[in-house]
Image (cartoon, rainbow, N blue to C red; front, side, top):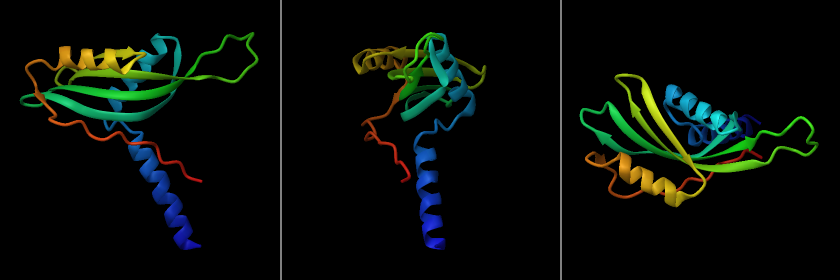
Length: 137
């Protein structure tokens, strides 16, 4: 019984860790950007989030991420929420606590924005493999 509880706890922890941005302020700003586009930012589930570029001494950072969020439904609609996939890029300056968030429907648009915002920065040489969410039974 104790082993099962530990296994369940471990799976939940891994699932939470994989869906976490790691920076609460940045995560809140991303959720607000999703809200501004008309989806429910609080329902956002991060599928992938990784640091792709950094400018020395480390205050300016560029992140790329994928998330799904519930599309807001109108009051007269009866059906369940549909989840929509977003591909995003965040440019964060930790000195000023300001971040620019760009959200796209396609990964190609995301890649172009990463290229624009990371010009002149230290870049990750190879992309990290995509991590799929771990769901507890």
